[in-house]
Image (cartoon, rainbow, N blue to C red; front, side, top):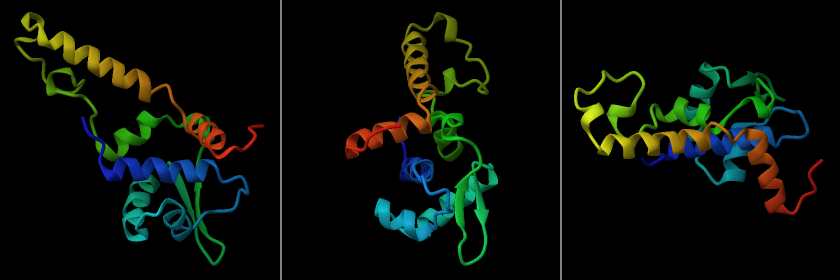
Length: 144
């Protein structure tokens, strides 16, 4: 499994929005400059996030984007699955994939299932609030 730039940038963008303590909407250009990402590419990503109602758009001269929920209500898994699709390492462990006839007799299926469970166990238990706290720690900021 490899996470694309779309998934990584979406996570960075959501983290910037989660760390926005002013409560004012952030513009794409601000996030792009802070993350050193193309604003054109971020516009494509924010469209995905907006359609899923993970962010909301504020129009006008003071406009930009805000999270629609609290940072603790978003998991890394939610954001990555939205932008990447399935994160299963192989088809046979995907929930929506038709059952493989060999799954029960295949020893490698145990590896794929454990790997899938490990991935989901990590990404579904880390929230944007966790990431924001870790970022503040790395920046030497005091958490409240």
